[in-house]
Image (cartoon, rainbow, N blue to C red; front, side):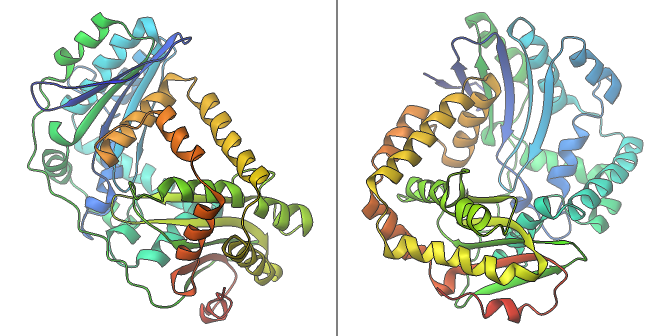
Length: 420
């Protein structure tokens, strides 16, 4: 069972003991990301995440920082989303104080050296090139652009090359002062943790101050007809993402939609994996997933299909969406999905870093932490009637969105296919 406490400076601390592991993870998650940016500074959340690893007052460069962690075999990384940013260290539990020291050092005393900023611009531009050259990764960005358009929710988290090139040290310091404060941050310590370890958190993070936090703009949801967006690229395979607007995190039907996603394309025995790949041989990868933000959400199916058979693939996906609206899911199939969710979650949460991520994300997005057991209870209560009701409410023509990366021109040719 986790424990939540608030330190003197307002920083929330989650401690999550994990039995049977010899590792521990320290994760800092901050409630800010690309949805908190403007058009002028789009990409700064992600760039700032990179700069945390480029040196501190005590560890003056990237080599000093990484070699110290490598010397104990630690795993360390960071990630930036649209509504949160996190960075973590996972170690042998005996070395976790080193992880606490380094993570707090990065957060509080990073140098943001001008020369390092200039070098890192090239790194991030190459990261942009990597995503743009890999449609499997990039299709999600195109789908959200299709869904949300020209507002922060529709911009790419990594930013634009133009913005990356112009950022200065002052931009990072201003953003850090505004968005990185004790009040919107969570420290999660998970794994084989001892009381004396927890007591040291105050020592390392007490200097994190409250910030003049700038909140994000509310996401506007405007759609009265199906929408399609094509990213022209000369490829041998078309990559598509076909989905529908849904609802935000914390919505009463959130867990029902998660079950629907698994049922449609969340496993090798799911409906769309079978119909697209096994029955028709139209795809190698097929997956259906959900995204829940604090003020919006969606469900979508992604697949890589033959360029000349993309229309067939779109029709198959829509057929399966329609089937959920019109035919009740059998008791046996629904139970299989529930057992799959339980089994996957059990395997996932054997590790300290997965536990840290589970609890910290919920605390940042929900302002509360739901335990895995509580989540599984909710999943277990999902009925065939629930699935049919939610499918009917979201799988409507005016909620459909299609993103495509491939050698195609006019979007209107695809819009005509978006009919349920």
